[in-house]
Structures are given as C-alpha cells and as structure tokens.
Image (tube, rainbow, N blue to C red):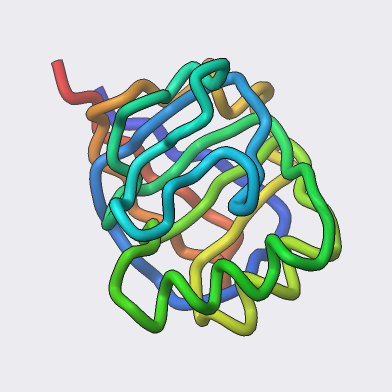
Amino acid sequence: MRLELACHQGIGPKVEGKALVSADNFSARYDLDRLQGIFSRPEHALFGQSYVGKVLVCNTAKGGVATAWMLHEMASRGMAPKAILFNHANTILAQGAALADMALCDRFADGDITKLIETGDHVTVDPGRGIVLVERSG
C-alpha cells in the first residue's frame, strides 16, 4: 500500500528511510542518549530503540532552546534522525532542524501522523513540496 500525505511546507532536504513512530512527544534533550543514539527516557514509548538514520514520527515537540542546538550537534556526529515528522512542531524545533539541515514537516492534512505511518514503513519526505510518501512495510 502506498500513501501520499500532504503537509505544511517543511524544512530541509528531501530524504527517505524507515519510520520509527510513537504518539509520544519528543525532546532531544530529555528523551535521548545522544552518544548511543537511542531513546533513553524509560517512560518514552520508544525507550531503548535507535533513532539514528530513521524518519522519526512523533506527536509534537517539547523542550526549549537546548533541543534546537542538540539536533545540530547530533547531525554533526552522524547520530541524528534523517527527518522528523510531527503533528505540530514548535519554532524552536524548526530552528534546530534548519541549523542541522534536517528534514522536518508538520501539520498533515490527512490527520494524526502517528496513526497514518507505522514503524518500519518506508517513508520519503519532500519538505519543499509538503509531501510525504509512505510505502507500507507489510
């Protein structure tokens, strides 16, 4: 099955990769072990899973300015997601994605992105066009 999802025009380059999905919110500061490349907060649904090189799909961003520069720091070491998709991003995460040259999209016309994409789906993110293509893994 193939889905084409429309979203607000995003930030960053066109990328593709495997999805890692959670309805939880996201903070690069509080949820991640940025050295190991995994979710480290035990209460997060993705605890113990690697986000490196994935298209990360979460409900919304949380946290302050540190989250923005942490995205850049992670990208500079090759320990970042390829893209982040949110139902609703915040300006701080948008700035962080721009600084890290990371794809980021939000505000999907078709509904809750954490329900439209499943972990393992192959996802192509085209922020400039505001389009996300999803190929179901099963």
